[in-house]
Image 1 (cartoon, rainbow, N blue to C red):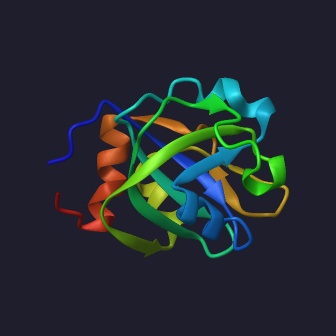
Image 2: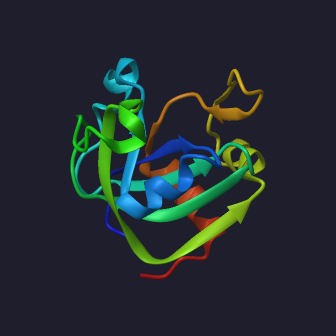
Length: 138
């Protein structure tokens, strides 16, 4: 069983996914930093590719959310960043919007038309409900 207090879901798309995975870094716009401020070292993270409606994970935060951990990542566009490390083998789960809804995660419609989590940080019970779809063992 994974030991964690809360979890977070951050977004990527087909253009940004590989950089997230290569750098072990998740990013968001600087203006959304306050929403990420709750993320702490040890929290469980998932990456949501909004182009493919796919959850990628499981990751553990290696740092709290900070501004400009790697200033050149994504050409500086996503300054609010969290360093992560994979937990075990990388898994991908499709039908993310359905899984999030089933787990009780509120969603909003992004400008791209994709359903995305209303808030990036979620409690342990919600994240455990999502992790059940990964069939992950540690």
